[in-house]
Amino acid sequence: MAFADLHSHTLASDGTQAPSENVRLAAEAGLAAMAVTDHDTVAGLTEAIEAGRKYGITVVPGVEISTVHEGKDIHVLGYWIDYTNELFLSRLAEMRRVRDRRNELLLAKLQELGVHITMEDVQESLLVSKKAEETIGRPHIADAMVRKGYVSSMKEAFDRYLAQGAAAYVNTPRIEPAVGVRWVLEAGGTPVLAHPGLYEQDDLIPLLKSVGLVGLEAYHSDHTPEQEAHYVRLAEEHGLLVTAGSDFHGERGGVVFHAPIGARKIDASVVERLFERRGAQSSDENS
Image 1: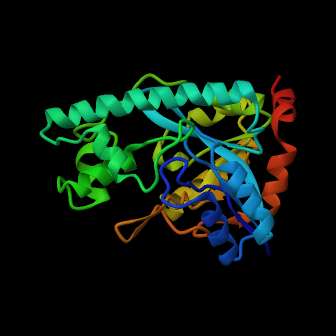
Image 2: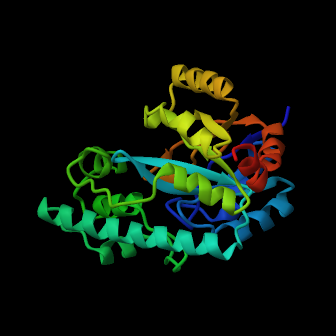
């Protein structure tokens, strides 16, 4: 069988490796296909697709859109998007501006808690300088906290300060998941709900299906076996495709986040099915 890992991050967002390196690792893992799904940016896709030709692996152009529902972060994956679509690019740029504001508020809250980290510290801890179309996220802030000795590990940074419900967590107003689904469809792509087990808001699934959601990422590195089985069942009940992703972010401090490429994978035939359900086709089915 041929397999695909449909969730990975690169230096364009909060991963630690160049897009081409992710593709190389996917090829080494024996995958037939993989997706690059950086947070609110498509800056790494051209390099990844070119590397796919070199390594003989299908690279699905993707993105992970940050949304909020009832105060909780919800992520919408988009596959087979037209990553040159000007409207979509402008929408992602606005999402990055919201993310920048979130980072400012988070750093201010850390200062109040006695953790004196500035954006200059975060910039200094980056593996490469960020371009305007790339994103800075909480893992970059966590890196700076480790480097300055406020915490001993990325995990401690998130557990104590950065994760939802932790001391410095902030959440700025963002679009609803249904809007994220619509954006993906309007960019000619196929929307999938990322790692639903992390939200435990299963009532969202029929709501998002009604506006064009095509799949659930049932197999994810942070899901338990019970959660994976649960979301496979829900996908079947709602007529949704099942996808899988490692959510690979590279290595920090000798620890791979969340898991190596290929740690979660699905039959590569789902790649073609995602392609067939993209954009107008999905919208027509739900109109």
